[in-house]
Length: 378
Length: 96
Image 1 (tube, rainbow over the protein chains, first blue to last red):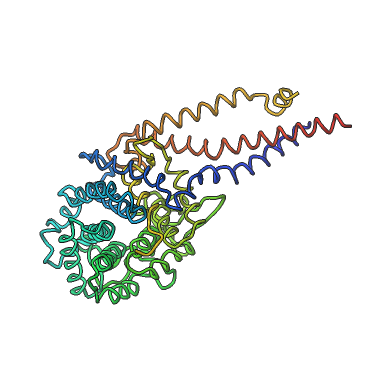
Image 2 (cartoon, each protein chain N blue to C red; image 1 turned 45 degrees about the vertical axis):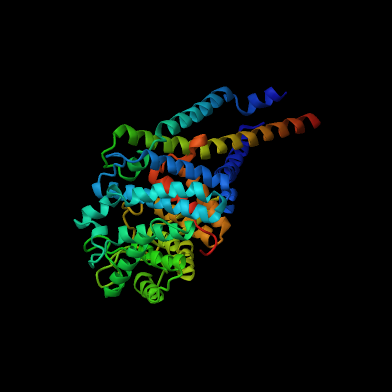
């Protein structure tokens, strides 16, 4: 047989192989994950609980910034607690075991170490400053979302009084805010952090049955100020008057679509659709999400976006997984999870659970929360 | 006959098989070595306080993983097509 025809056959096969096999290989099990398979979720939960039980020593995260190291510790506990709560809602029979794990994550999240990122940035403890007007919205918003979900998932939550106090503190801060946005750190406003805070107020109302009369107006004002009318994406950062200070971006938009699903399904869907329309690219069974829209001049990667490779963001892609599940887009979910499987490097440790080697504790916790994001309105 | 076809399509199949096995072993070893964290910080923030060794391993893992998930299937599918083409050519010759 002539050499050239063998080469043609080889190249033809190689192209077929590239187009089909990696996508099929990496999407193994994604249908079970989408369907909420208990074993698949339990394996993720075991790995995340393992990280939390081991705890994080000084230097466990080494991002090069003490603030980000502390943020990642808090973020790991917060996302883990959300994942356990979501899983309890989906699998009520396992609620008792999940509650133990959720409580462990919540206790660590509320500990001095968990609060350190916020305390160091504000030079005061958020829990001791509830009556002030200082934003503290990263800690208060994210922590309160966990507490509201805990209450919704487990009923008689032992964090109920703290949940009430944080909700009141956030409500009074929003009442006093002229822009409808609270500061994450002094002089810094991130709409996605406010999305978590607003979601926590709405979810508190659902969990307790107590009315939150101002939440609809707050959400409307949030959408008016923080959603880019051109792309439908969320601005990453805002000025004190609520005007945008950064471009609309994928990581913030996808994470806000997840948070807001607890408060306003319609706004969450709009953000999810904008992420998919403006930023997502799908090929060969994989899906990736850009950090910046095509129309925006190339932006730099930062701690929020993670590495940006050819314009596609690690965080934006990972966070978008939740929107796919929440809004019943199975293809989107399976393709995005296939991408996470390709680059995240899943590793099954048997009874110790399944971990993403490239994700570490924070990556595992985020992918746990995103993979178990509720498909039903809660 | 089957051996002939394999030899014609891929005379260096033992070397290829060893290379693929080596990649798989390296991938599994690195996964176990790096599974206890640190990798994400190394990748996200190369300026961080982690060791250059971890960063190097992280990058190596990415390369090896990409090779295993994308390049090896492409190579094997290519070889499979090549084998089919050689076999088809032999059958045509014999019938002629």
